[in-house]
Amino acid sequence: MSLDDREGNGRSRVDQGTAELVREIAEKAQVLARKELQLARTELRMDLKTELGSLKGAGAAAMLAVWGVGVLFVAGALALGLVIAPWLAALLVGLALLTVAGGLAAWAWANRVDKPLSATRQSVQENVDWAKRRLS
Image (cartoon, rainbow, N blue to C red; front, side):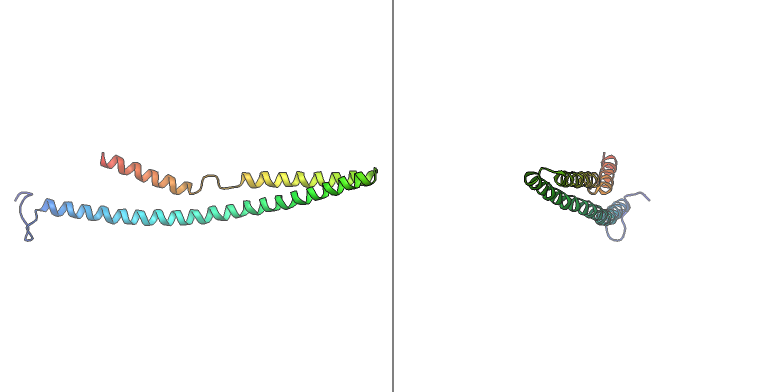
């Protein structure tokens, strides 16, 4: 018997093997797509959680900056009204608040998600590269 021997349905064994292979590839591609989507969802949740922490730090920094500016205005008013030590104390407190705000802002910036979905991107790229190698 040769590979071109016909089955009862009129297709050769080679055609049946090819159809089965194509069906298997399609099923695996669906599974891969579902897994990639699941990975993207999981990674997005993690990135959003990290980003929320950064936003909280940025909010605290903004709040302290507003308070610092307020204290600096009070210091200026005290300095103009009385040329004595109380304005210097208020000025130092304002500068300290602004320094803390700057530190919080730097921390929030350093902890932001700068490359969202990095694991998903890498996984998709690996899959595309693999598919290109297999098709060439």
